Image 1: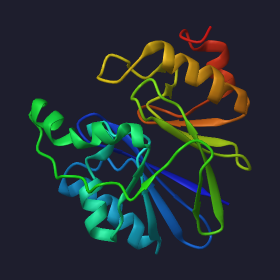
Image 2 (image 1 turned 45 degrees about the horizontal axis):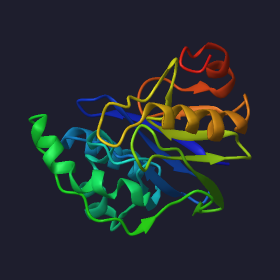
Image 3 (image 1 turned 180 degrees about the vertical axis):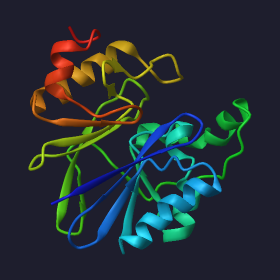
Length: 212
């Protein structure tokens, strides 16, 4: 049984996810921990729960989702796993942060490139990867069939969708990703988004103005 913990971090109020199972192995998805206090909060939780981080995954590489990459990499000897199409986004992370007037630690280079159909394993658990570009060129969504949840990054939100006006974004591609990759998974899937509250496929299918 996978447990999901949400931490809302950084100046962009980004959702960082920590997933673990009964083995106490855990994965950290989109570490947005920006300052010392936020990083301590994440580490304290890991220590208190006696968890062992074994993977660092980015659903995409916009700055708010990778602020903590360097810290997590150094603390737990992990390197990020991303989709290859977001490599350029990761490479321009520090420059983008400077444009916002933000200081940031550099992110290490990826150790693994994730693509559609790949399986992310930790402990006794497994997650599947689906390629969902549009918000960024290399956005991925990670989902679990048994517990029917997905970590969707900034692809789909409660009542909204990811912005497509950033470099590499494309509105039609994003809508196609949602309609052809996420909605078919089923209405009873819970969506854990990169910002804001969780939602469900069923609710978004019926109420999201971008999908009606």
